[in-house]
Image (tube, rainbow, N blue to C red; front, side):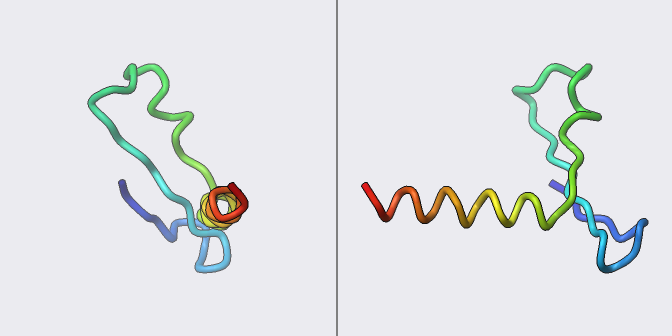
Length: 50
């Protein structure tokens, strides 16, 4: 996993690397950090609601 600020502090991105992901999909595992954090919040809330 790597975080980058190439697009500025307000637009940081996260890159996720894994030996289990096909190399053709590596570029698809780069997305805004805020989206990742929002997904974690949603998943956390869903687990609390179980």
